[in-house]
Image 1 (cartoon, rainbow, N blue to C red):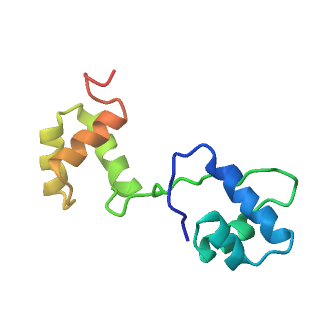
Image 2: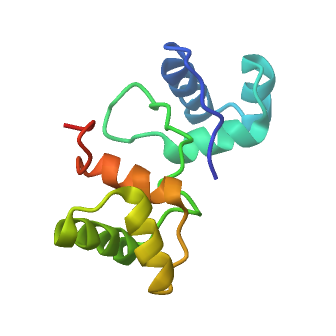
Image 3: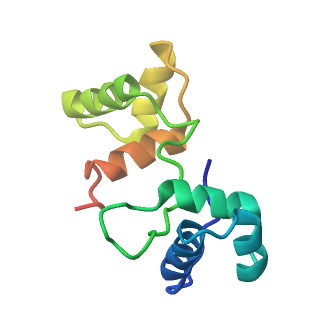
Length: 123
């Protein structure tokens, strides 16, 4: 149930204006025709509208919270513990992980080390 992301700085106020019109007695269909948006969008805006006196409905990001193919926390911790144990390069860590039964790509090992500042280039 996400709205399309927009960079228009005026859109939060436009949304609230549509809500104001609905609350003043106009139907959502009439407001949708007047404003140029779909009726379902107007209904969602009315549902999200604050009742505490704020005059905008902020634009929510459509970015995902997590990636479906992200490494598990256990695997990331295993990579980091292998690195702390012997301070070996990513290629050797990848080989050790594979021999221990973990399925992870070399680029994922390198990226994990980079994100955790465990490479000489990330410091």
